[in-house]
Length: 127
Length: 127
DNA sequence: CCGCATCCCTTTGGATACTG
DNA sequence: CAGTATCCAAAGGGATGCGG
Image (cartoon, rainbow over all chains, first blue to last red; front, top):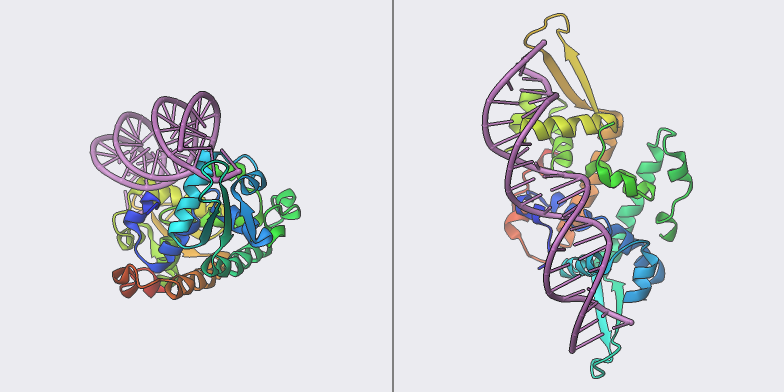
Protein backbone atom coordinates (compact mmCIF):
# COMPACT_ATOMS: atom_id res chain seq x y z
CA UNK A 1 0.00 0.00 0.00
CA UNK A 2 1.50 3.26 -1.15
CA UNK A 3 0.00 5.83 1.16
CA UNK A 4 1.06 9.17 2.47
CA UNK A 5 2.51 9.22 5.93
CA UNK A 6 0.01 11.74 7.23
CA UNK A 7 -2.15 8.62 7.17
CA UNK A 8 -0.88 7.74 10.58
CA UNK A 9 -2.94 10.54 12.02
CA UNK A 10 -6.12 10.21 9.97
CA UNK A 11 -9.05 10.48 12.33
CA UNK A 12 -12.21 10.30 10.24
CA UNK A 13 -13.62 9.44 6.80
CA UNK A 14 -13.24 13.04 5.66
CA UNK A 15 -9.51 12.96 6.24
CA UNK A 16 -9.31 9.53 4.68
CA UNK A 17 -10.81 10.95 1.47
CA UNK A 18 -8.80 14.15 1.46
CA UNK A 19 -5.66 12.11 1.89
CA UNK A 20 -6.33 10.56 -1.51
CA UNK A 21 -6.10 13.92 -3.25
CA UNK A 22 -3.54 15.71 -1.08
CA UNK A 23 -0.63 15.30 -3.40
CA UNK A 24 0.42 17.80 -5.99
CA UNK A 25 -0.55 15.61 -8.94
CA UNK A 26 -3.52 13.54 -7.78
CA UNK A 27 -6.30 15.85 -8.90
CA UNK A 28 -4.51 16.68 -12.13
CA UNK A 29 -4.35 12.99 -12.96
CA UNK A 30 -8.05 12.63 -12.23
CA UNK A 31 -8.76 15.61 -14.46
CA UNK A 32 -6.93 14.42 -17.54
CA UNK A 33 -8.11 10.84 -17.16
CA UNK A 34 -11.67 12.06 -16.82
CA UNK A 35 -11.21 13.95 -20.09
CA UNK A 36 -9.28 11.38 -22.11
CA UNK A 37 -10.82 8.30 -20.45
CA UNK A 38 -7.74 6.19 -21.20
CA UNK A 39 -4.11 7.17 -21.49
CA UNK A 40 -0.85 5.35 -21.83
CA UNK A 41 1.89 6.18 -19.37
CA UNK A 42 3.83 8.44 -21.71
CA UNK A 43 0.74 10.27 -22.93
CA UNK A 44 -0.38 10.84 -19.36
CA UNK A 45 3.05 12.16 -18.52
CA UNK A 46 2.95 14.58 -21.45
CA UNK A 47 -0.43 15.93 -20.37
CA UNK A 48 0.90 16.63 -16.88
CA UNK A 49 3.28 19.47 -17.49
CA UNK A 50 6.60 19.15 -15.64
CA UNK A 51 5.87 15.94 -13.84
CA UNK A 52 8.80 13.56 -13.40
CA UNK A 53 8.76 9.80 -13.70
CA UNK A 54 9.57 9.28 -10.07
CA UNK A 55 6.65 11.35 -8.87
CA UNK A 56 4.18 10.20 -11.49
CA UNK A 57 4.87 6.51 -10.92
CA UNK A 58 4.62 6.94 -7.16
CA UNK A 59 1.37 8.88 -7.37
CA UNK A 60 -0.16 6.37 -9.77
CA UNK A 61 0.71 3.50 -7.45
CA UNK A 62 -0.86 5.35 -4.56
CA UNK A 63 -4.04 6.01 -6.53
CA UNK A 64 -4.21 2.41 -7.73
CA UNK A 65 -3.91 1.26 -4.13
CA UNK A 66 -6.76 3.62 -3.27
CA UNK A 67 -8.75 2.13 -6.16
CA UNK A 68 -9.17 5.42 -7.95
CA UNK A 69 -7.32 4.24 -11.05
CA UNK A 70 -7.16 1.11 -13.18
CA UNK A 71 -3.88 -0.11 -14.62
CA UNK A 72 -4.11 -2.40 -17.62
CA UNK A 73 -1.03 -3.91 -19.17
CA UNK A 74 -0.89 -5.39 -22.66
CA UNK A 75 1.79 -7.38 -24.43
CA UNK A 76 2.74 -9.19 -21.29
CA UNK A 77 4.41 -11.84 -23.41
CA UNK A 78 6.57 -9.30 -25.19
CA UNK A 79 9.32 -8.43 -22.72
CA UNK A 80 10.30 -5.22 -24.43
CA UNK A 81 8.11 -2.23 -25.25
CA UNK A 82 5.31 -2.74 -22.77
CA UNK A 83 1.94 -1.07 -23.27
CA UNK A 84 0.14 0.14 -20.16
CA UNK A 85 -3.12 2.04 -20.08
CA UNK A 86 -4.51 4.01 -17.17
CA UNK A 87 -8.14 4.96 -16.61
CA UNK A 88 -10.41 6.00 -13.77
CA UNK A 89 -12.32 3.42 -11.79
CA UNK A 90 -15.97 4.10 -10.98
CA UNK A 91 -14.78 5.29 -7.63
CA UNK A 92 -12.32 7.65 -9.26
CA UNK A 93 -14.91 8.88 -11.73
CA UNK A 94 -17.31 9.58 -8.87
CA UNK A 95 -14.78 11.97 -7.41
CA UNK A 96 -15.02 14.22 -10.44
CA UNK A 97 -18.38 15.63 -9.39
CA UNK A 98 -16.97 16.47 -5.99
CA UNK A 99 -13.98 18.20 -7.55
CA UNK A 100 -16.35 20.17 -9.77
CA UNK A 101 -18.26 21.31 -6.71
CA UNK A 102 -15.07 22.46 -5.04
CA UNK A 103 -14.04 24.28 -8.20
CA UNK A 104 -17.41 26.05 -8.36
CA UNK A 105 -17.14 27.03 -4.71
CA UNK A 106 -13.67 28.40 -5.37
CA UNK A 107 -14.93 30.57 -8.20
CA UNK A 108 -17.87 31.90 -6.18
CA UNK A 109 -15.61 32.98 -3.32
CA UNK A 110 -12.76 34.39 -5.34
CA UNK A 111 -12.76 38.00 -4.25
CA UNK A 112 -11.58 39.20 -7.61
CA UNK A 113 -8.08 38.16 -6.60
CA UNK A 114 -5.98 36.04 -8.90
CA UNK A 115 -8.12 37.01 -11.85
CA UNK A 116 -5.66 35.45 -14.25
CA UNK A 117 -5.97 32.18 -12.42
CA UNK A 118 -9.74 32.19 -12.45
CA UNK A 119 -9.98 33.25 -16.07
CA UNK A 120 -7.68 30.60 -17.45
CA UNK A 121 -8.69 27.32 -15.94
CA UNK A 122 -6.21 24.80 -17.29
CA UNK A 123 -7.24 21.76 -15.37
CA UNK A 124 -10.92 22.32 -14.77
CA UNK A 125 -11.60 22.81 -18.45
CA UNK A 126 -11.00 19.11 -18.80
CA UNK A 127 -13.94 18.21 -16.62
CA UNK B 1 -0.17 36.45 3.53
CA UNK B 2 0.50 33.12 5.15
CA UNK B 3 0.09 30.60 2.38
CA UNK B 4 1.52 27.22 1.65
CA UNK B 5 4.38 27.09 -0.77
CA UNK B 6 2.64 24.69 -3.10
CA UNK B 7 0.80 27.89 -4.01
CA UNK B 8 3.55 28.66 -6.45
CA UNK B 9 2.30 25.91 -8.70
CA UNK B 10 -1.45 26.34 -8.35
CA UNK B 11 -2.98 26.11 -11.80
CA UNK B 12 -6.75 26.40 -11.38
CA UNK B 13 -9.54 27.33 -8.96
CA UNK B 14 -9.83 23.74 -7.79
CA UNK B 15 -6.24 23.68 -6.62
CA UNK B 16 -6.68 27.12 -5.10
CA UNK B 17 -9.51 25.78 -2.96
CA UNK B 18 -7.83 22.51 -2.04
CA UNK B 19 -4.77 24.43 -0.97
CA UNK B 20 -6.87 26.05 1.76
CA UNK B 21 -7.58 22.68 3.38
CA UNK B 22 -4.40 20.76 2.60
CA UNK B 23 -2.83 21.11 6.01
CA UNK B 24 -3.15 18.58 8.76
CA UNK B 25 -5.27 20.84 10.97
CA UNK B 26 -7.33 23.00 8.60
CA UNK B 27 -10.40 20.79 8.31
CA UNK B 28 -10.30 19.93 11.99
CA UNK B 29 -10.41 23.62 12.83
CA UNK B 30 -13.36 24.10 10.51
CA UNK B 31 -15.11 21.15 12.14
CA UNK B 32 -14.82 22.30 15.71
CA UNK B 33 -15.59 25.91 14.88
CA UNK B 34 -18.65 24.81 12.94
CA UNK B 35 -19.79 22.92 16.03
CA UNK B 36 -18.91 25.44 18.74
CA UNK B 37 -19.43 28.57 16.60
CA UNK B 38 -16.95 30.59 18.67
CA UNK B 39 -13.90 29.49 20.59
CA UNK B 40 -11.08 31.21 22.40
CA UNK B 41 -7.55 30.27 21.43
CA UNK B 42 -6.96 27.98 24.38
CA UNK B 43 -10.32 26.24 24.06
CA UNK B 44 -9.73 25.71 20.36
CA UNK B 45 -6.32 24.26 21.17
CA UNK B 46 -7.82 21.87 23.70
CA UNK B 47 -10.38 20.62 21.19
CA UNK B 48 -7.63 19.85 18.69
CA UNK B 49 -5.88 16.93 20.31
CA UNK B 50 -2.08 17.15 20.20
CA UNK B 51 -1.80 20.38 18.24
CA UNK B 52 1.08 22.65 19.20
CA UNK B 53 1.04 26.44 19.47
CA UNK B 54 3.41 26.92 16.58
CA UNK B 55 1.31 24.90 14.19
CA UNK B 56 -2.06 26.13 15.43
CA UNK B 57 -1.07 29.79 15.23
CA UNK B 58 0.40 29.35 11.77
CA UNK B 59 -2.65 27.51 10.48
CA UNK B 60 -5.02 30.09 11.94
CA UNK B 61 -3.10 32.89 10.26
CA UNK B 62 -3.25 31.08 6.97
CA UNK B 63 -6.99 30.54 7.28
CA UNK B 64 -7.56 34.14 8.31
CA UNK B 65 -5.62 35.27 5.24
CA UNK B 66 -7.85 32.99 3.17
CA UNK B 67 -10.89 34.57 4.86
CA UNK B 68 -12.18 31.30 6.23
CA UNK B 69 -11.89 32.45 9.84
CA UNK B 70 -12.62 35.59 11.84
CA UNK B 71 -10.31 36.68 14.64
CA UNK B 72 -11.78 39.03 17.21
CA UNK B 73 -9.65 40.43 20.00
CA UNK B 74 -11.07 41.95 23.19
CA UNK B 75 -9.40 43.83 26.03
CA UNK B 76 -7.10 45.61 23.65
CA UNK B 77 -6.49 48.21 26.37
CA UNK B 78 -5.39 45.60 28.87
CA UNK B 79 -1.84 44.68 27.89
CA UNK B 80 -1.84 41.42 29.78
CA UNK B 81 -4.26 38.50 29.50
CA UNK B 82 -5.70 39.13 26.06
CA UNK B 83 -8.97 37.55 24.99
CA UNK B 84 -9.22 36.35 21.41
CA UNK B 85 -12.16 34.58 19.83
CA UNK B 86 -12.17 32.63 16.58
CA UNK B 87 -15.17 31.81 14.42
CA UNK B 88 -15.95 30.81 10.85
CA UNK B 89 -16.66 33.44 8.24
CA UNK B 90 -19.57 32.89 5.86
CA UNK B 91 -17.01 31.62 3.38
CA UNK B 92 -15.63 29.20 5.95
CA UNK B 93 -19.10 28.08 6.96
CA UNK B 94 -19.96 27.43 3.32
CA UNK B 95 -17.12 24.93 3.15
CA UNK B 96 -18.79 22.71 5.73
CA UNK B 97 -21.33 21.41 3.25
CA UNK B 98 -18.56 20.48 0.86
CA UNK B 99 -16.67 18.67 3.59
CA UNK B 100 -19.85 16.80 4.48
CA UNK B 101 -20.19 15.69 0.88
CA UNK B 102 -16.62 14.44 0.83
CA UNK B 103 -17.20 12.61 4.10
CA UNK B 104 -20.32 10.96 2.69
CA UNK B 105 -18.45 9.94 -0.43
CA UNK B 106 -15.72 8.48 1.72
CA UNK B 107 -18.17 6.35 3.65
CA UNK B 108 -19.90 5.12 0.50
CA UNK B 109 -16.64 3.94 -1.03
CA UNK B 110 -15.06 2.44 2.07
CA UNK B 111 -14.72 -1.19 1.05
CA UNK B 112 -15.24 -2.41 4.55
CA UNK B 113 -11.63 -1.49 5.24
CA UNK B 114 -10.69 0.57 8.25
CA UNK B 115 -13.97 -0.28 9.91
CA UNK B 116 -12.84 1.22 13.17
CA UNK B 117 -12.19 4.50 11.44
CA UNK B 118 -15.56 4.59 9.77
CA UNK B 119 -17.42 3.55 12.86
CA UNK B 120 -15.96 6.10 15.19
CA UNK B 121 -16.05 9.41 13.41
CA UNK B 122 -14.37 11.86 15.76
CA UNK B 123 -14.35 14.92 13.63
CA UNK B 124 -17.37 14.44 11.45
CA UNK B 125 -19.63 14.05 14.43
CA UNK B 126 -19.11 17.72 14.98
CA UNK B 127 -20.65 18.69 11.69
C1' DC C 1 -3.80 34.25 27.81
C1' DC C 2 -2.13 34.21 23.30
C1' DG C 3 0.91 33.52 20.95
C1' DC C 4 6.26 34.06 18.56
C1' DA C 5 11.39 32.53 17.89
C1' DT C 6 14.28 29.02 17.32
C1' DC C 7 15.76 24.70 16.26
C1' DC C 8 14.86 20.10 14.54
C1' DC C 9 12.89 15.92 12.28
C1' DT C 10 9.89 13.83 8.86
C1' DT C 11 7.64 13.79 4.57
C1' DT C 12 7.11 15.26 0.01
C1' DG C 13 8.52 16.37 -4.44
C1' DG C 14 12.07 16.34 -7.80
C1' DA C 15 16.70 15.59 -10.74
C1' DT C 16 19.43 12.31 -12.77
C1' DA C 17 20.83 8.10 -14.48
C1' DC C 18 19.68 3.59 -15.76
C1' DT C 19 17.05 -0.98 -17.09
C1' DG C 20 13.81 -5.11 -18.56
C1' DC D 1 7.87 2.09 -23.32
C1' DA D 2 7.28 2.20 -18.69
C1' DG D 3 9.06 2.61 -15.26
C1' DT D 4 13.11 1.93 -10.85
C1' DA D 5 17.28 3.41 -7.96
C1' DT D 6 19.65 6.78 -5.85
C1' DC D 7 20.35 11.03 -4.02
C1' DC D 8 18.83 15.68 -2.84
C1' DA D 9 16.13 20.07 -1.69
C1' DA D 10 12.25 22.03 0.21
C1' DA D 11 8.23 22.31 2.77
C1' DG D 12 5.32 20.82 6.62
C1' DG D 13 4.86 19.65 11.27
C1' DG D 14 6.52 19.67 15.94
C1' DA D 15 9.25 20.52 20.76
C1' DT D 16 10.89 23.78 23.66
C1' DG D 17 11.40 28.06 25.72
C1' DC D 18 10.34 32.89 25.98
C1' DG D 19 7.48 37.46 26.03
C1' DG D 20 3.80 41.26 26.04
